[in-house]
Image (cartoon, rainbow, N blue to C red; front, side, top):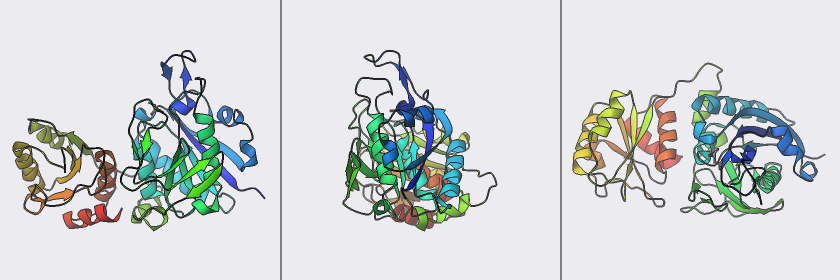
Length: 333
Ligand code: ASP
């Protein structure tokens, strides 16, 4: 019998409609999932499919409310013996954040694949149909199990930990610059190169946060973007707004000017969690390089970019964790 794959749709350009097929203007999140599935030739040869609409928004409007619902729905579905894998359709703008959130919160070894498109459904050479076809092939494939949440775009299989969006318009926008690809998929034919080596999904301890049905309060964590001669009061502004943590999108190896560093260290002394990440697109941020993290009470983000560091810090602060424990989480996940 063919495997069974549930497609959960959240919106994005893959469900978008252009004002005209040859112009760049369009609206995200218009085409319902049933219509999307029906438009793809032979997709039902890969798997038995179900489609569900979770939301229909551009991913710039994705929210933690939707993400919590999405995680719980995925966990429910994957707990059923007759469901073999999940595909989530999503906008590309915040796809890496959603994929990483699911990577930490889905409690199953079964494949979960996030996909989307750079071109709306009715554009010339729309990329959504083949991305969805390939994603169903990966989600239906037993070899995709235990690899965490995957992102399938433009024939590439990325790990949720490593991918990042690098181009505003190109269909080859997602890259996995530090760790490389998990595999490739071509018209449904899959090849895998590796397993992601950080902890994820069925081994993640964050899954327990989502077992209960009670509302989950995720603490506010802000991202402050470092730049030449930056004003240090951006840090005060976040704390005054209620942030329990701040991720600095630092320059270079997670740097910031002296004034900001002093202000951030003061706040760390008051119990605000300060994570140093980098605005540079690739590379790690290490401890105690140019900044004395031990003295300032900072956390280094290791490989996570600011957007993903924020997701991990929010989940870490939803539980009781000390500074040292949070630093350890950045080496573990
Ligand atoms: N703004 C769109 C979104 O993230 C872009 C896309 O899907 O490619 O929903």
